[in-house]
Image 1: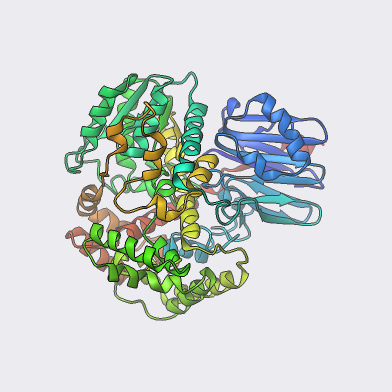
Image 2: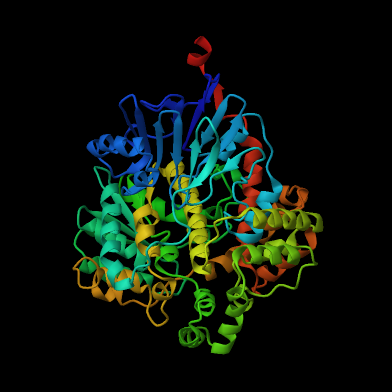
Length: 611
């Protein structure tokens, strides 16, 4: 696994990451698994700056940025194209700055004479064998929102830097400090934002292009846009997963796009009996170790089929994916709650009517679902949620039929033991009391949480691509400046009913970059058929995974009866909480991996010992 770490304190440390390479210029900082070109640093004695990852700043820009470091304008260090970690030192202050989408998360743990920081919570836990924080893991499973418990990580004694914050270490304190506003400032109309989105996305793609071969997914509007942008500069090998069970029109659009865009070599990847959800879970050794539970363990066989097809046609290079596009270009219909909150009743009614037509329901039903969230704040909602956890679980109903919520309570919460639900409720009460900078709108909160969840999962997908194929995954929609440009547009404009991803269409219509028939597309493929097929074909594997040896069951994070009932429903094709099952599967796999991964992170730092 790729990771970075560092020590900032009064004394040298006797340990260093196993196989780590010292970061140039910075003292006591290392990277593991990063190629040389992915680590760059500058310094003049008074200030130091390192960027780790895919950063679009050239050497001159990095040197000029030392003035920014001296002025401690930390946010300005996050505005270059690409996906990277920034580490900056000025005097006795050190800032470690991850990205907005959690592809480069930051963790820390204090010691008596200093602070360890890292992009891997597991590595910091391995310093002394700190155990998993089961309550924090329960929160991940029950809510699906990474920031609910703030700085609490998945390991005891290891702290997490929440989304939009940086780690700032000074002689006076070590803390997570916000560098990104909780809500977009200023709000920008969609038509005015479109050129900025186009420029940011173009730069994000260009930053990843070099001498390596380029491949890409070619399916929906998001990935198609990336293919078109990359093909302006280089040859692109484009892939569509084309399992006949999907019954969508991705292949038709992909074929038409490849014919219209020069520089695109197109290939459809046929499905097979093995390319279904949950395949391969009987051999956990074939899955890469990730720093947190990762959703892509569920779909690994499908991702591998595409990467197999890429490697058959070219050497390992860069593979573009549209991951994150849904999170920044669209918005859930929960923004209707914000319209009600702000008194825009007529506008809320109009949007409710449009959403009702799409979902074959009534506008009153849409408004009834939206109204409770419009009457509460985030912290009030958490207090109400804590009270709900202290009561017996209610019968399962699909999320689409439940009231809109700041933090939805997922079906996994109903699978937990009563004691675990009570511990989670207590943690939620504490989080509500401690949360000081909550956004005023539900859309602003949920947008950031969706983004962080997708980004963290994409980091896990990157591990699959890199460890199994030597392929670098590129997800430009998750770049900081792309995120900022998109989320500056109000949710009701990004998700306007009757138009599919209007922000991306507005950004590229009549530009000769993306064909007009693509920007006018209103359909989107889905994988439900492969999910249900995987549930049927791997039912025995899933029962074994959650059986007597289950780590989740041992911790009280699942109980036998509701899980058995859910697996029975799923295997017979009945409606079930598939998203919740994905969370549980990925958590179970991760817990089993943690058992074997805690001994290989650190080694004696011979230089420090000699000193």
